[in-house]
Amino acid sequence: MDKTAHWENVYQTKSSTEVSWYEPDPKQSLDLILEAAGEKRGRVIDVGGGQSFLVDRLLDSGFKQVAVLDISNAAIEATKARLGERASRVEWMVADITQAESLGEFDVWHDRAVFHFLTDQVDRKRYIELLKRSLPIGGHFIVGTFAKGGPEKCSGLQIRQYDAATMHAELGASFEPVESSEYLHTTPTGKSQLFFFGVYQREN
Ligand SMILES: C[S@@+](CC[C@H](N)C(=O)[O-])C[C@H]1O[C@@H](n2cnc3c(N)ncnc32)[C@H](O)[C@@H]1O
Image (cartoon, rainbow, N blue to C red; front, side, top):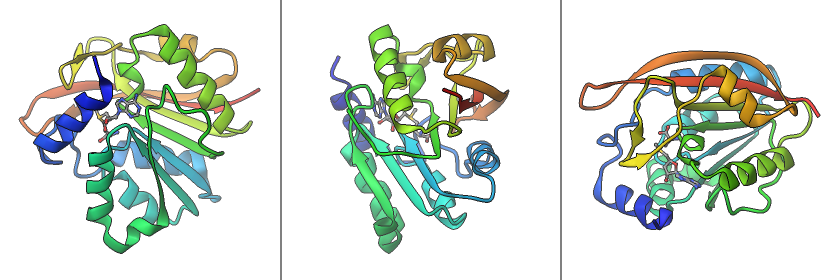
């Protein structure tokens, strides 16, 4: 399966408010990011940001450096267009997160509904190695995935469900769990999807 082609097709054929992961107010993510960043509000990256409104909220919140990465160029271009002149304050990256070598350093790495697509252990290993290269000691990793008992597919693709124990086991001893929670996301067609969210601090 060509991942890039899949996601380009999604964003070329569906509007931002039609996709199942659409949320007009990414409150869960923003609250966790603000809590992790504290007063500093330094460098933050939204991995697999797509057309999420999170980047708008991060700019509103005064982060000094905001980056958005996505495998889909169409998603990135649409988000840039939505932001208008504010787009120039964001660093945009079009890349497959399992293939990127270096992204720079960030204080907070946020991922809502990307890591759960990594059904191949090699891809998860590459992702976590890149995460470690990008997150200095003390930095925070915030990840949202479908939870145990939640949906088994997202965008027609197989996913892996997580809970606090399985995510911690996946990340390994370099990441200290800070908090985790579950919440119900309501899709644009009214379906409920159970999400797991975990916050981790880079320890060594
Ligand atoms: C379910 S959507 C979630 C989008 C966004 N995080 C949100 O919450 O609205 C998954 C996103 O991850 C992107 N994506 C999927 N696989 C990726 C990969 N290997 N590398 C980078 N981005 C990826 C997709 O293009 C899509 O925008």
